Image (tube, rainbow, N blue to C red; front, side, top):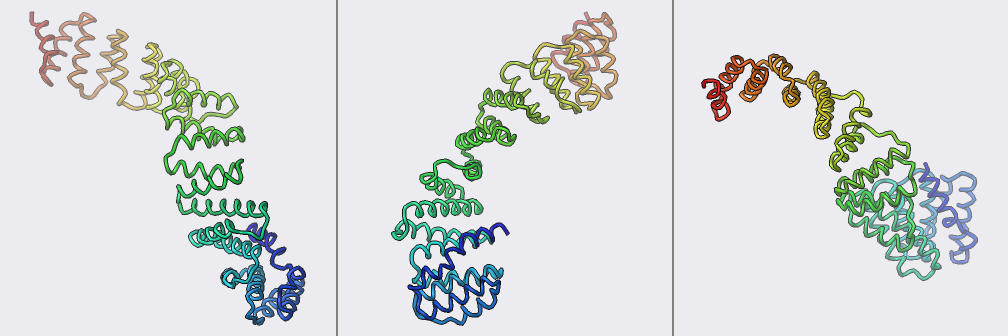
Length: 390
C-alpha cells in the first residue's frame, strides 16, 4: 500500500498535466484525455480506461501520452500486468518528451522492483541511467535527483540478487551525488562488504553508523564481532567495556568473550571474576573454564571450588579436580576421590602411588605402583617398583 501511494503521488502530477500539454496533443486525443481525466476525478476509472482504450492514433506523442495515462489508471485498478504493458508501449512510442520519458522509465522500473522482478528492474534502471547521462531537457538539479534515486534503486535490486560488487560500484556512483549516506544506505554497503568478507571496510561502515546511532545495540555488536574477526583483540575488549558502560547488558556469550579477551591480555584473574560474578546458571564447561582461569591466576583454592562444581555436573572433569588436589598436596582427598573412579588409568594409579607415598603408606603405594605397571610397564612404573624392592 505504501508503494502504491508513493507511486501515485509521484505520477499523478506528471501523468495528467492535460492543460499544460494540450497544445502538443492532437485535438481529438486532447479531448479524449480531458474527458478521461474528468472521469478519473469522479472515481470512474473503468469508464476512463474504456475511453482511452478506444482512442486510436498514429501520432507518436499521442500514443505515448495515452498509454502513460492508461498505465496509471490500470495501476489504480490494481491491474499490474496491464500497467507494465502500457508503460512499455509509452516508452517504445518514441513520442514522449524527455521529462515524461524519464519518469515513465522510472515508473516501470519501480513496479518491477516492487514485484521482485529484480533482473527486469535492473535492466530498466540501467536504461534510465544511460538516458539520464545524455539528458538535455531537464535541469541539472532534476537530473541529479533522478539519477541518484535511480542508482540507489539499482543498488538495492542488485543487493537482492546478491551481486555484491555491483552494489558497491553502484553505491560509489551514488555517493558522488549524495556524499552523506543514511543508515539504510550504509546498510547496503555493510551487507555487501560482509558478503565479500571485506572486514576492514565493513568495520569502517559500522563505526560510521554507530557514531550516529550509539543507542542501538546491534551496531556495537557488529563492531565487536568485526574487531574479533580482524584479530583486533585489545580494541574488541575496549569496545565491550564501552558497550557495558553505555548501559547495555552483556549476554552470556559476550561475557565469555570479554573473559577470554582479558585472559589473552594477560589478566586471567579478571577473566575468572567475570565467570564468578556475572555468569549465572553455569554448566560444567563454564565451571571448567572458570577453574582454568583461576589456575592461570594461581588462585588454586578458587580453582578447586570451580573444578569441584564442574565434576559434580559432569564426571569428565573429575580427573582435573584430582590433579589440582594433588598439586595442592591434599593427598588423602586425592585417594578418596580416586576411589570413586570405576577404573583407573596407569597415570591415575601412579598418582595414587604418589599420594600414598607422601602419606607414608608405603605398602599401599607399592600395590598402586604394581597396578600401574600391570596396565603399562614403562620407566615411571619401573622406578617406583625398583624403589619399593630395595
